[in-house]
Length: 154
Image 1 (cartoon, one colour):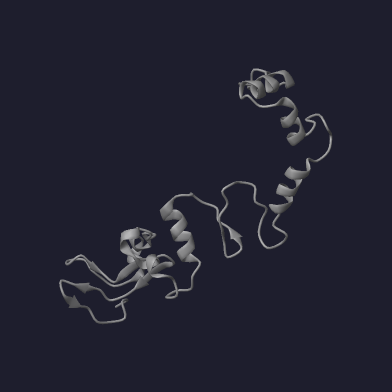
Image 2 (tube, helix red, strand yellow; image 1 turned 30 degrees about the vertical axis):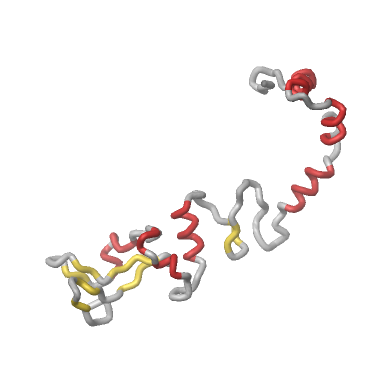
């Protein structure tokens, strides 16, 4: 209603919006304060102060913000990406079971590059490379009911 691009972001336009919402101009001004004052608004200042990292993590400048192990997560805010980041924060073999659940599809596909350095049988299309939330591991597979034996590399 009061776009800045059209230079309509004015007191008059704001008052019109307040009236159109059926709100009291006086009540809004008491809540918001004088828009022309050249000082911090106490409520907004408190909110900004609460977002300052104070050494433990960076300032929160975008909401929602995800903090994992006192570090701000930077990435997509979609299920798979967030779950990968959470799972990667655990030490190997200490992560919750959801991190190794193949249905969650959080693998990183690092086995695509040189088979992750693991053993593979090209003819049978079997590999010891297994993607995990923290990278790859070489683990002898079970294929058609047969458990391969070895260290996963040879």
